[in-house]
Image 1 (cartoon, helix red, strand yellow):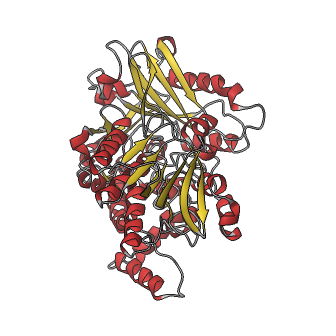
Image 2 (tube, one colour):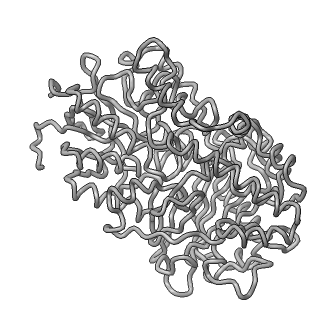
Image 3 (tube, one colour):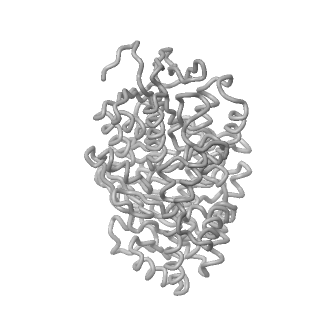
Length: 541
């Protein structure tokens, strides 16, 4: 539907990240006139493929598709718009300083055999624990795709929420409840120390957890990653799915944009939102930085909670206790990204000469739990650790179209680093960070430092300035127990609605949180559509 300058949209989405595009597609599919406003010149938010040197493209921020929801893939028919993923196999791979490289194969029997080379006891224990984890994750799975319950017994609606919660746990045993609570509150390090004898085995599990999260592996609440990463993803709804996206992560958001346009979504880029206007307690319009204004019956913000409520909405339009809670959301992102173009493929010491290109793609450089804990301890006081945890993906081995023949793309996720530096600023320290990352990689792949053709370093400050991630937090708020489920983004407002009538939160700052899942976008759109069908917006406009 074409709109004149004076017409009113049914829905405006603030921010064209993957959740915003997902929400837009679902709203338009239901017949609502929908507009997406994106501040950058391209859509995708932190799920993009960008050229970092002539002819060389990288997934500049998000880099692996792990939990992209099968509902989103199938309902929006993303494969029809070019989305193709191939499983990471091994799902993860850890090279150790002694030259031993340990892959975690997708096939469990193959993984058990590999782990048996390290410890027969740990290989058997791996299967036993994997069975328990997968069963517990299945109890949590339904909550991923629905609003969390509001814990408030003052109305029948909230009692109904609690009954819904109880039904999800029908059949769970008291032992499983104890295990679930332990995983939600306990530390990854203590769990691993209790269950495994080999330090290498513990490190392999560490390499698959606490991504982008505050806290070293011995911090309370870090064990939750063991369950979080076993939630289903991919078109076949596989537990623990990890995928390389052909064309880079931007293929996901380009497919979402194309699906949305097919349903009638209008997308405007280079359209930076300055303010969400509120009249009589309800969302009224969006004011852009260029001075223009666009009206809508409902507005969904894909921006994080702090950017939305502290920057885009006038304080007088929100309750003070709500603002107080939003100000207290833990952000302070602990991550950075370094993207490299290389003149030759990285050669990781210990990798078999017979390994296929896909088997030479994914390496996590973290030698031990103690190393990770020490790294976090340094970063939490504002220092940049000398040695860093680096996740390496030789993405051109999975997808040769990303670089011309002879060149290779190495994209690196880095933690732990501080958002706030004790001394200096990130503009001064950017290249030092890049140097330290390259030095760490060179310990495992000695040919890398001499093969660099181009280098892009994205500090936590760059993630904020370029990609709109407040304090550089890739999850729109730390994934910790007090900021999850019915506590996300803040207690009392976990069901995508906000204190402003007609304003919804549809990004990773809402339940179920971060990662390229599409779940917050889909859930928020469905909540908004329920309200729409109740007639909440008929008088608007």
